[in-house]
Image 1 (cartoon, rainbow, N blue to C red):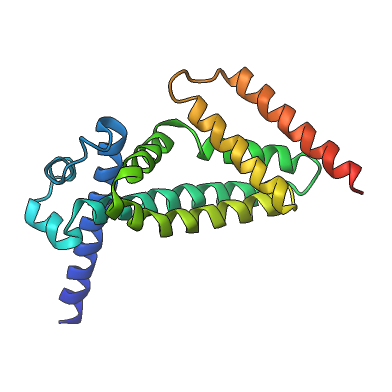
Image 2: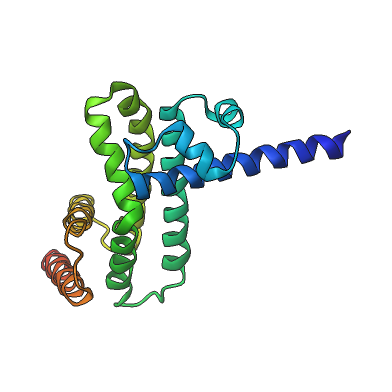
Length: 196
């Protein structure tokens, strides 16, 4: 009995993961308006009944997918940043990792939801706690590995988020991105040196 119960729990967890990954894929490929319950179920290869059983509404499914995606990206950044040498180059390397996590197609999927949430009260209410947790985690990473100053950490996140938005329509060349991040890192270093 215990074995079959564990198997059912494992199957449920597997189905939820399929649905979350399918939702992220739909957001990236189809945008928010094209991320329907039917499209997600088809992408995941599960029945609509299974999809409804696990998440019920599109807003709950999309919100869970955003949290899943954000957590996955945060875990990747954390894993990489922990491996950086604790030397003078670490803040600049951490800035690259943060910029990488906040750009590209997966970041575009998150922005799709932010725009939709502006006029969708239920979606906004569901997304706010997720975004607050993500922002707190990003701020913590920024303060620990890039700059331990609350205002400069917030400005750093704003710069990186802005770069991510700016690169959606016309992707930045790696050289241009590196120059922009080098300039920001230099400003941070100068500001911190002036306060010592």
